[in-house]
Image (cartoon, rainbow, N blue to C red):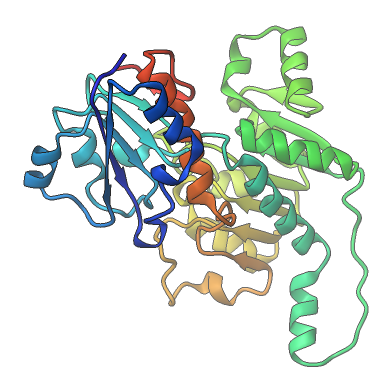
Length: 336
């Protein structure tokens, strides 16, 4: 077992106090390893190098936002053996520190983020933005909307979130098409099985994106930000999309070329967009996206479900029990 484990928890100020000692999993760690005590230190502010040196953590758990400074510094500290990300994205840690095991919380909030994606799709499709403007003017005028039943939803990057979105979309009668990198190595039968497991009707490799875009009435993005996905949705991709289709981005802002997207929304070639992430965050007050009447803007909050720090912490504590017993960790990004 890992004896005398020292865990550093990086938190935003508002999450402090929602952490480890309040969960049954942590108590189990203490109870099950009485001769191997675990020490915890909370850091609501970035740790100075001298503080890191003084505590010398073996494990770092970061529930703080990507903007919280010091995460990479903590991950690279020589005493650290395992860094757990309280979220799915880890691009803020790249290049990953050598000899450090890195895990993330991919999929933990997937069901809740899927709710937000579907809510955005229903709001755009149902004309609720227009009704909001009418309500502000106290103006009564019924409007028709096109049903989602029979329409095609393209999920770009089907993982845990995409699978939950696909399940709900199928219940609405949509035809769900997905892309996934692992399909590259599959034959048709295996790809069909992967699609079925993910609640999709079809599953394709990422290289098929340009061919799939003209088929989709709704395109929802669920990819990590990498060199390959940066500006994946650019002017060419937007031009390939079906006229009047909708775009949803709850992944990373830089996956979409924001300038090209704004032009497509202003021209009407896209009927609307739900955007939770942006190339520059917070979205500047000067951005024209704020004023477009066919755009839903939310402040990178698509998975900000109530008590999310506790949900992440509970998952981390389950992993901490495995770490204490030197068992394999879930959601492994890199083995140290």
